Image (tube, rainbow, N blue to C red; front, side, top):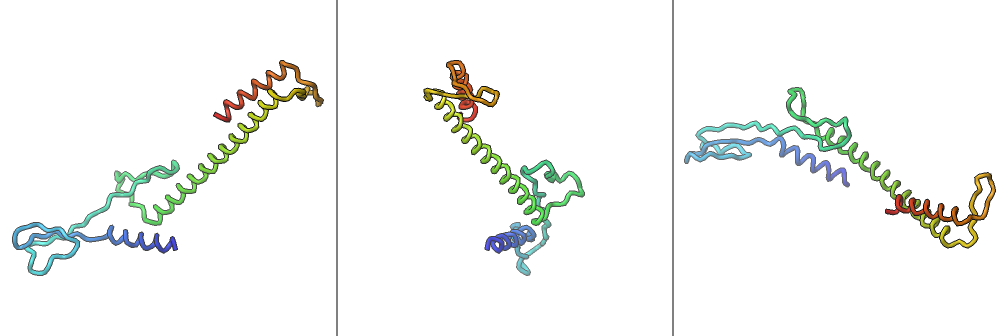
Length: 161
């Protein structure tokens, strides 16, 4: 259904873009601009105006997208298919960036929760045991407890705020 709507809109815009404009002077000397040829006998002079639309410029996307400046005579305006393809590429890139951002946010929230849990453990556990670095465990003294609290607070600053 969406493809049909897009196709109809694209077709409608292409008709408008390729429309003709007529300039003519009527019998009273008034200059008329219309999209229809002047009525027969009403025109003193008639001229069909050829109007070129400016080239469409890209507004972002990746670095390979080069906006058309019109300064090069070999530059051609992009067709609807090319513009649609560029749009799809930009949209896919934006979706990837959003997924990365969401993943980072989720990871940051998880690390924040872990840091808060670690802080709570170091502050409230009466008999806290920590790794001795040799594969065993030992009871945490006040210095080890304070070191763990300081590390947890740094992690909270980094990931929670």
